[in-house]
Length: 120
Image (tube, rainbow, N blue to C red):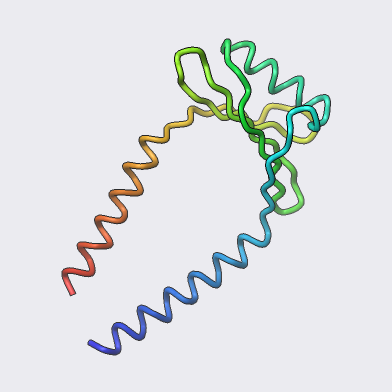
């Protein structure tokens, strides 16, 4: 029983260490819309206009040497979307921001972990 706890603790410590390493590769920072490159501004604004939406927070993300900009846009009906744009202004993707789905998945994962611990 004690060996299982020791192994579990080591696995968690290694996972946290690996997470820190990956986090160092990625850089995320909030950036004012006015500070974005003109091509990025134009693409984000066009996507917001097409959805009759307002532009919220914009993050600049650099991963493996590539820079992308993620902007949250909110439609008049309250639905939120995320627009991902490359540094040159090309649209990478637009996706619905489904916070409720993410919350449910997080709760499900936490519940499964709890059940696993109770089973031992």
